[in-house]
Amino acid sequence: MSRPKFYVTTPIYYVNDKPHIGHAYTTILADCLARFHRSLGDETFFLTGLDEHGQKVQQAAEKRGMTPQAHCDDLAPRFLQLWEKLQIKYDDFIRTTEDRHKKIVQLALQKVYDNGDVYADEYEGWYSVAEERFITDLEKESGQFREVKQIKERNWFFKMSKYQQQLIDYIQSHPEFIQPNHRRNEILGFLQKPLGDLCISRPKSRLSWGIEIPFAKDYVTYVWFDALINYISVPGWGTDDAKFKKWWPASVHLIGKDILTTHAVYWPTMLFSLGLPLPEKIFAHGWWLIGETKMSKSLGNVVNPLDLVDQYGVDAVRYFLMREMILGQDANFTIELFTKRYNSDLANDFGNLLNRVSGLIGKHFEGVVPVSDKLTESENEIKNMADGLPSKVKELIYNLQMNDAIEAIIELVRRVNRYVEHQAPWKVIKEDRVRAGTILYTATEGLRISAVLLSAVMPMKTKIVLDVLGALDSKPRWGELKAGTKLKSHEALFPRLEIK
Ligand code: MSP
Image (cartoon, rainbow, N blue to C red; front, side):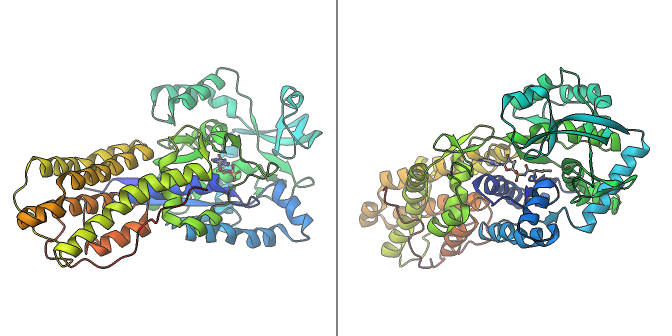
């Protein structure tokens, strides 16, 4: 029997932007999901990358007196360095300027054209350079769009409207397709109005930095038609049938709520036209707000993830972002919230449990894991909780409830801490060494299982814990901790932070 497969994607980020915690968040989320799935034995493919074409890139390059390609080559490493620092283990990284992608975009354009789904038309309307798209009169009047100008030109259009009913039927018969549910309703609402056709070309005279349209050499393709194709160009559509069959459809496209329409309307209709199955799920998460306001360059409140990692370490940053955001809702970032979460979950709960067990085993058992003898009700409670945890976490992860999965694991840690306090092995040792050994084995085993389960989120610190316990490649199964193991010495895992 073939193993279950898991193919997860992040949006491909605009190369022009400086990576901020919004980008870091989605990428860490994809990484944690991918690590969980790998640890469950699923065949996993995690794709991320960069969106390098379009007007903004061309203009930014001109300003710097560089070619757009040189400009992209100069900026791309900022993302790669950040991913390395954040311990992101992607399976492939696509840049849309790579040949392997460009030729597939052209293949897709040609197919859609051959199907009769593309036509040319004269178009006159308002165009927002900042948004890189035509906007309606209403949108122009809203004043929310920058760099708006009147444009009249001949362009190529994709018959998106043709697929409107098919898309509505699909969404209605696949409740899992767009998540969370309020986003699904948003799209169904949007689809109640007639869907226009999508302008998919830009004349080279106005914009040359893009992929040339194979049937209209004076045009390049619209950046979204180019970018979305990455999800199929990388896993081999048009070049490697076996690979493509293995990975497509994607298990989940992770996106932010602001790019829902492009993913839940443009992309499915493109796939319909190409005769390809739709991704299993599109999940739109909320925004990271900085103390309740939107993060934006002009407000100067953009949080740089590299600074955070330098100051607090990669695991704490990953933990905070994953634990704090309820998937689908907006979340707040402030240093106070970060410090509070760090101190309560990481310093007081998880780090403290390691300190306690290694301290007590060091003091009373020469640093050697004691034997677990007869279990009483209290030990069985911990054991039962730990035994049930992997399947509970698995279910939550399959449901994309990352914060709940983490909470369930930390709940075990808290429970074990309370158990140690209550059992007071430092007192029991005076009368009953065997019983004290059982208590410490139970606590250490609880710690080990939580560390194994948390390793997708905090790969570095959990590795330290498991190394101390001599259990680096162990599974989250009760009893894998070996009595007789000499514990390694270690430093405080998460030293408490001072609240400023
Ligand atoms: N290039 C397009 C995506 C093409 S995918 C085929 C793009 N790039 S982006 O760099 O502007 O944004 C990428 C992602 O960052 C989006 O999912 C967006 O929601 C996310 N975020 C940008 N700011 C954010 C926050 N403040 N918080 C969380 N995510 C945010 O769009």
